[in-house]
Image 1: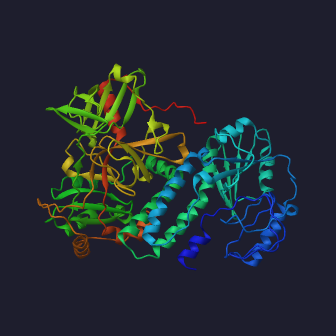
Image 2: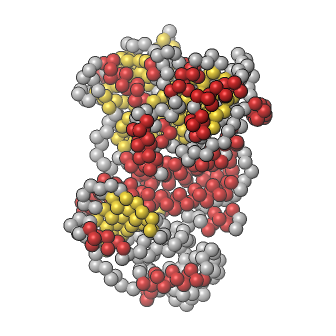
Image 3: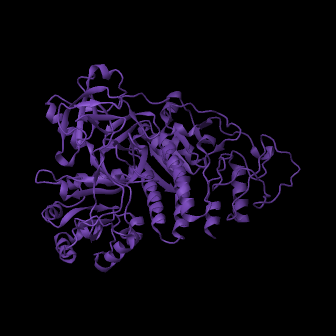
Length: 640
């Protein structure tokens, strides 16, 4: 089976979860309909994928005749299978309800769907093939089947949006269709029995009391037992399954292509989306690991301290969650450094392949005139991005705009809009803990015009909270900047240290983001807040950090010169003298382990420097006094 056939067979021409049966006679794909029966509302024709055998077809025909709610086993076009009124049968269950929802009712599913739709064009460019298109979200409808008694309060837990009882003409019912049972007043065994008696790929039991989320795989079915707080997470996981399969399919096609820089970055993007889809499992694992380690950093302290003291080391950090890279000056002895590092923590370097390279990143400060927030100095304006607002918890009327220290390097500097209107003054600015942070207190005249709500990737208002967990748990991140507006990227390095920016009191790491589909930031975007989504917290976004610089060109040789490193020269230099070892730890991404050789010789472009925002806010609060606390707006009501 070639790549195109794989794409077509596992594509996204989705079949509604039919409450009907299949007749014993089926058309081969592409055959003409010969039946004399005129199709009506109760009659449709669909084609089965070529990889289903005649035995498969007859077995599914028999099972669907016995159970009208049984879904077909695959993603199937919805226009060539003959279905008759006789085969539909009648409802045997009185307590069963099918409701259809707009995909936007499930925000995280809608978000993942959008990421994949955006990725598709890059997959087609890289493979020179027409890959399976996913239908427009405006054409898709999500079906959820409820059994037993369901109250209005139950439905509000599923989503605040109201479901419909019928599908509009032209809409495509999403392939994954969860079967949900609310326990309510039922005995637990009765509720479980109700689910067992129905056949579906995804079954969810919602217990009345709090419980630990349980997910089991029974034959070809997934079975969830959740409390009400985790129902949306379970539904989202079920809805995402066809998308996950589609990404697997795309990766299969891309791996058949020649290994190039373009295919590597597309595979990396797909891997990031896949990680984003399973984020809650990673978080649970990392939280237990963090509690056991007593810290959130990955790089051991003794290795950091050793590299901080090395004058020929310019920077170092985790790379792709699979490698540990050390960037050194041109004349450094890489082999000696390698041997010394291995002696210090051999176990760490079994998890992260050690590479030492004669390169360094040149960080470019984003100082230029913009239209968001700026300072005036010597009759000139220096511009950056107003990243967002925090308010004082005890004094809700006090609002503070967040931006960068290199835009406002001193307290009491007035802040202006791009129309040169003064909106406040800088009350705190710092470069401590690797931050580049400034807070502008908004004056009363400008305060009335401030919208303190956080804006998500789709420009809608959303609640926001500070993210304090490990960066390597994250995958896809976003920012909204004054210069390049909304962009997204993936974490290139979750833990990066630059000796040129560090001193004895400043040993905290920053993180690097690589843009997806272009630059993550441009000059003028400094101060943009970096945020992320995950399905466990669908009612707010996690504010991770702040953009403070970018590096959009090739990596420079650290030799006081301006000569750029060509890709071929870099590759040959590294292959002759780089230090590379294979690793086998499951903590590293399989994708990056499998492609470590290719990744090692690729210059990452469109790199943005970001720092963690929670240490900056903590420094701000400490500076303002014991009773001073700030937060992002997080009290918006759930969207209808």
